[in-house]
Image (cartoon, rainbow, N blue to C red; front, side, top):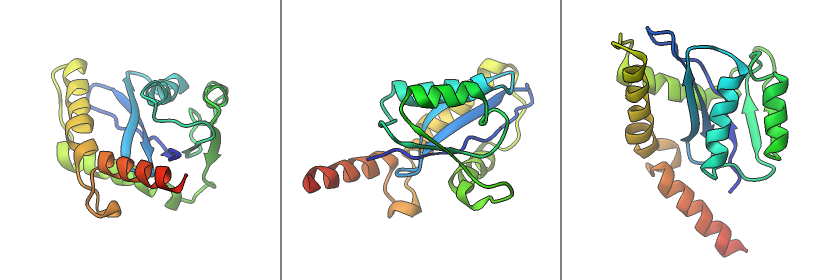
Length: 163
């Protein structure tokens, strides 16, 4: 199964936290994420590093993003090359290829709304909890109401049978 991460998008909390995520389009699972108090390329690279360290990126996978400056940075391009991935970007003004990521942000905003947390650690813990205990375990209509884990296992079984 080749992971095809969708683009990351910003979520700015009341405490100026920026969150970046990478989604696996094959499962709709958040495979890497990072939070910081800045909006620089390192934040996107950190999220991609998480996905790689968890073994969610396969050689040659397509790493897709929009055209924000952090995604067009040399730092991200070098990291993608190091991971033997292939960088992909949508055309300017075309939002359709980013629908999966937009759906993630819509669910996040619907579930947690716009909150004021007492500190950054609380905000991080809340968003971590949302991703790890709710979003990555929820059943997605796209894949017949299977969880991301069930979808990944099914794809791996089908690939094993085909081999």
